[in-house]
Length: 318
Ligand code: TXA
Ligand code: MG
Image (cartoon, rainbow, N blue to C red; front, side, top):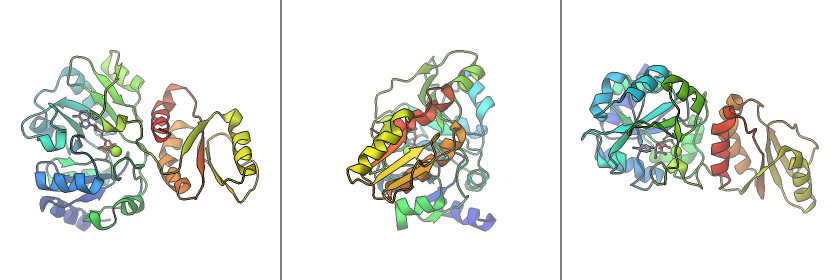
């Protein structure tokens, strides 16, 4: 990955092509945000319903007024505190933010990422890039370039490889388009972080889909069934299934592999929320390919720093 790759990727976007690129959260599948033909290809490649809005990625806050007609005080505070970074703001849209990227809603989602490759691409392209997570609709998001290629094969014109994503789960989404800021999707930036920056309490969204499809029950889901199991029951559940002749996958974060068994695929993730989130999707993919009848996932702690991980695991398990 070098400057030539960035220039080539920007040229592809200008011609209406699709470019996958790394961000600090997950990989995005990008198209020129004001090119309806390119956006249409993007939705087709993802298999995503047309009424599900996408996030417009920008290089700088100076571009926000092109897409958002009102930037309320709360949005200014959050942008100042967390941009560039893993935060998406939902704002009232301008006419430039078309029906095709907003799902025909009156709002648009905007984010200024901090990842150097994303920033270089946004600067070279010079305009908004519409980019959902680079996975087929309903699948686990991609956190490496290799996983992007697994998802899309030849349906992407260019993949910028920036190595594994640092955060590992999608951005925090705050709707600041009405009077009261609403948390639509938890992420690395926690509800507490947002409240501190706002100096005011946050409403937790009870949004109905398809407003934010990340909020659909069966999202971020592998094909193998998933069961969330309390730590105290994890070992017994796994042993019971093995005894019944099943091949079992386990995703733990506090218990190392208890016993060697060819039919037991046991992964121990880091015991801290940030480390766990970083490794989560890549390991869900690994376990999904391990030909097991079920993936048992050790229930994460109920503390606030694990909120975003709990959210993704709840959706992955339906
Ligand atoms: O971290 C991320 O946010 C990644 C990277 C690539 O930036 N992107 C991502 O995009 O996760 P996607 O499309 O998989 O999820 C974006 C979420 C969706 O749930 C979508 O409904 C919501 O943002 N969203 C976008 N525009 C919206 C709007 N106007 N109102 C409500 N939700 C919106
Ligand atoms: Mg997604």
